[in-house]
Image (cartoon, rainbow, N blue to C red; front, side, top):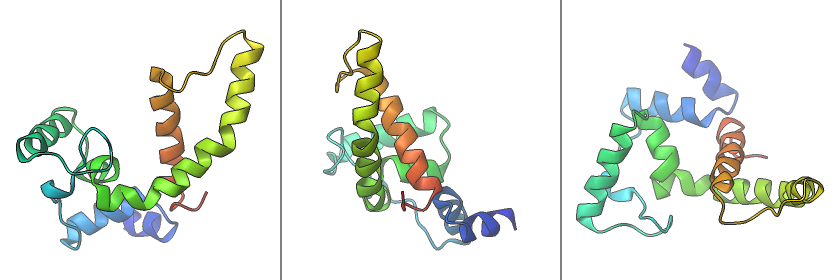
Length: 126
């Protein structure tokens, strides 16, 4: 019941969880993306990616949101837009602290994760 309520509010993770429970959404190993984030991996790499996701204890719905190109790709524009909108502010905050906001730093992943969560939990409408 709470999943249905969350789905009605645009909660993408709840939508995927409910779909998986009802058998409407299938976990497709072949739709997982490679390390470039866009293209499909080699067959042996798909299996390793799935093992890594399972080893991390991520729920099936979160696995789909993270690395299934067909599912997560629908949130790419929202995530990109969120990052683009906030990047100047983050760069300025770093500058006032005498730091440079580097695009290849580990904290960029955590920043992206925040943007992605915002999009996933808001139905991709940010």
